[in-house]
Image 1: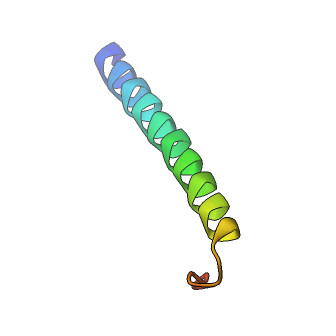
Image 2 (image 1 turned 180 degrees about the vertical axis):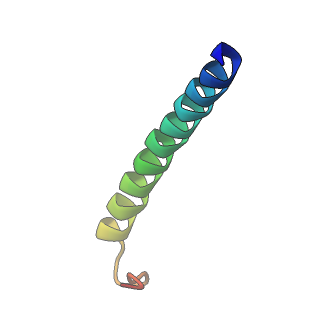
Image 3 (image 1 turned 120 degrees about the horizontal axis):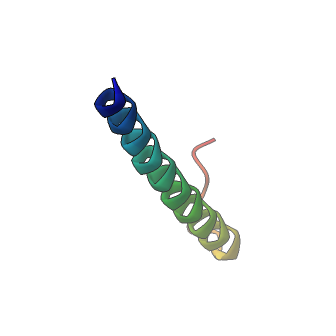
Length: 44
């Protein structure tokens, strides 16, 4: 049981880290989009 809990905890930690990385990447892309000279547009 402890091994299962540890495995889940490790996976949650990895997913949380990846989520933080994606949030940072999205913020950088939004900033880049905001600074574009009209040559880039949002798909939303």
